[in-house]
Image (cartoon, rainbow, N blue to C red; front, top):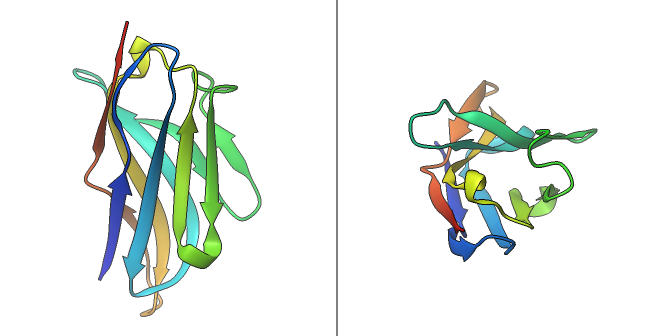
Length: 119
């Protein structure tokens, strides 16, 4: 079994910063991709940023403000969020595509953490 546990999030004023972290544990052979998604009330879940061993990707709406990073040795990844805007308010979910010790590749999600940016 694999689990993803998020930390960070909270309430911050516009222009402020927050850092989200996600830790994966369990029967992990390899994490092929890590990422962060968010879902605002009444909207669909959207990709914020993703990272693999060879590339990173950030949504246009967060480029220059958010940075995703990973620590392969610890099976953790983070999202550094700067210059936050009220429109960044959402529940943020960490995601990973993991190759398990059984040899199967599956998508896993964290439970989500609330980020609220006040104006």
